[in-house]
Image (cartoon, rainbow, N blue to C red; front, side, top):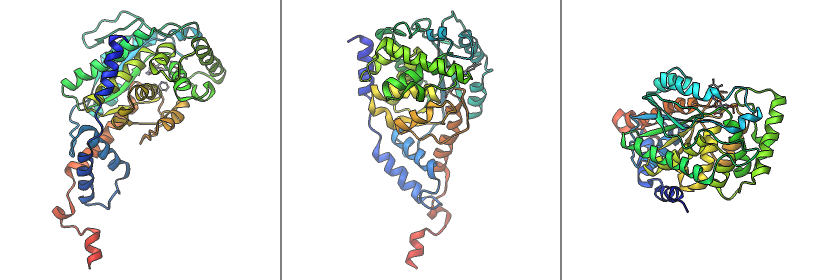
Length: 359
Ligand SMILES: Cc1cc2ncn([C@H]3O[C@H](COP(=O)(O)O)[C@@H](O)[C@H]3O)c2cc1C
Ligand SMILES: O=C(O)c1cccnc1
């Protein structure tokens, strides 16, 4: 086994189970606050999950970041996207200048944007760019593997290392984002191989292709799988053969973050495909993953369901970049503020329901 694969195994092994004492303390506090028990619904569930992940009954999420991993896809040669592959690099520059949707929404949520070149097929240079290129884009997966197993492992490791760096910089929660023209095709292929869905169920319109082109995209995914025979029982094999570098990097980021007790907010279809890979590499990751929104990409609903993830938002968004994940940060902030700032029945002099029973 390569060094990178060993790093992945070690990262998976360091993920601690959720802190049950912190969850119990947070639950006791939630039940002492001036509201009927459970009446804040999913906000209370989020508060408990954050307590378990962070190991604190009063989690603090003062520093937030969204990590946008960017990479290109050789499968674009098959005509699977409505946009040309050059858009990947062009959008990276847009992220770095602050002009993309994720920049605007992240700023509103108080989150920093970190843009990573993990596999863009262009030479990029910018002081704000995290230059971590593993290779300049994948190969066309309909004629051979997208990348080698060692490249896939290196990309996962890149994400693990980055999570460690961000934890060291004091971030308390990470959101996932991506940019890569063609990456809904790779995500659909991973969904077929690892979650057992058909190309028809997994393939959507991505950036906005029409139904005829969707038929071609379905057939492209089927050909890629037939050509490479990826192993359903080996997530790294599937990732290498039909995945993508940004998907690999995000899977690693999730493992690395969980190892540092940082909760990770998962964005749309592509990020959820990365979560699928990451969960296969490390099932113990689950308590650290927070689904954000159900995207308009058609496979997303089934993929979320198969992973048992229930995102709180459904806004008919289908952009990626981390846009849904950063919107969800507002809800996480709301959950921790409820825990921290609401008055208890005793503090506010409000009668609790048990007191009523006693009368
Ligand atoms: C201008 C522009 C900005 C984007 N930001 C995210 N995506 C999204 O679209 C791509 C996936 O769709 P497909 O598989 O159909 O290519 C990814 O880059 C994703 O992040 C964008 C796409 C475009 C065109
Ligand atoms: O769900 C997503 O994140 C998505 C959907 C379509 C295109 N890009 C991203």
